[in-house]
Length: 206
Image 1 (cartoon, one colour):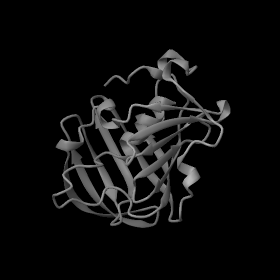
Image 2 (cartoon, rainbow, N blue to C red):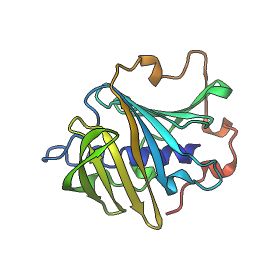
Image 3 (tube, rainbow, N blue to C red):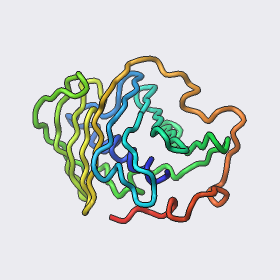
């Protein structure tokens, strides 16, 4: 599940902080929103893990907080950019654990060198968005972003792997604070205490 969630995050946040001072599109939502995505390509088939057909991402506080979950999976991911914290929450075990925050480094996706080229307009999940080509030192892809920063579609290729997400539903609504914190009473685990198969903690191979 760790690798599934990291893959989803790499697709959701392909260029989170690139060249903010330059004339770039908004890369995170400017209001609370939940997006349901269809998972495409290799992102749906991580080695030694169940296939993932959809991912739900909830954003709050102008994109500062993110929750990523996949139906049928035993855990979900919480990301707090302001606190620089990333958690894996496991409801069945009533526990959670801290993960290394530097998602981009773990995924070999260098945010600083990303270059975006505008291609045109498209419609995804009934909403209008602008298509961009995205190029970095480690890979290339495309992203379709709404004017208010919601990513409706993304395709990423790194080495011999490729995958993507495409929105099937978008809901603008206030997000409760409890959605972005572990439930009360959940136990915090250290990484060595987590009972997962060894392959689940192995780094992805590009």
